[in-house]
Amino acid sequence: MTGPILRAEYAGMALLLLSAGAVFIHRWRLATIIGLLAVFFCLPLDAFFVAPGVFYTLFRGDWSVPLQTFFVRDDVAIAAMVALIIAAGVFTRGLRDTL
Image 1 (cartoon, rainbow, N blue to C red):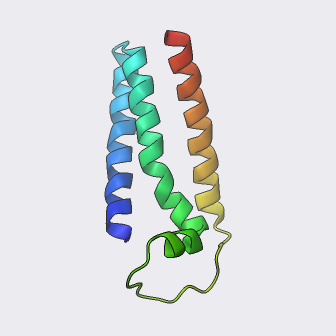
Image 2 (tube, rainbow, N blue to C red; image 1 turned 90 degrees about the vertical axis):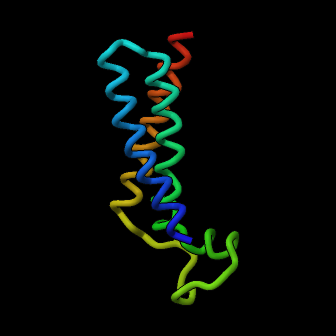
C-alpha cells in the first residue's frame, strides 16, 4: 500500500524542483501547472499519516498491523498538508493570473 504512495511522493518532490526551475527561466504557466501536479502527488502521503483509517477502509488487503485508530494527530504531517494547500492556492492563483 505505501509503495505507490511513496513513489508518488518522490515524483511530487521532483516535480516541485522542476517547477522551481521553470520559474527561474520565466515559464510561469508551465511552473504553475507542474506545481499543482506536484501538490496532488505529495498530498496523499501526509493524508495517510493523519487519517490511516480512511486508507484502511478504501484499500482492503493485507496490512502489517491492525488499525488502532481512524485519525492520528501528527503535527508534522498536518503542517505539511497546510503548506501544500497554501502552495496549491498560490499555484491556482498564479495559473489564473497567467491565463
